[in-house]
Length: 117
Image (cartoon, rainbow, N blue to C red; front, side, top):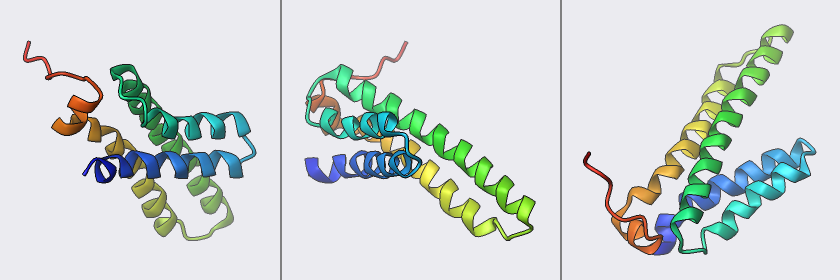
């Protein structure tokens, strides 16, 4: 069960690392890959860093989406399918950060209960 819960953020981090690696940005590729290692650190700060990294990754996907659509439009090529795919990757990356709201992961990472104030 724990493996299944951590699979979405792990896959999102791998895809993000591949994106940065393909772009030639080895520093950001390394940081994205480091998110994988943090999934094995059962501390609240590690979960928050992963969440922040995935949120930043979702933003990167949206920026990439804008650049790719703009390039396709400039060339007069179709872009709807590209927009749907990259937009889906951005959404999946953002949603992967929400797995830390699952009670089992909240306990594992010591996140406690959400405040009602």
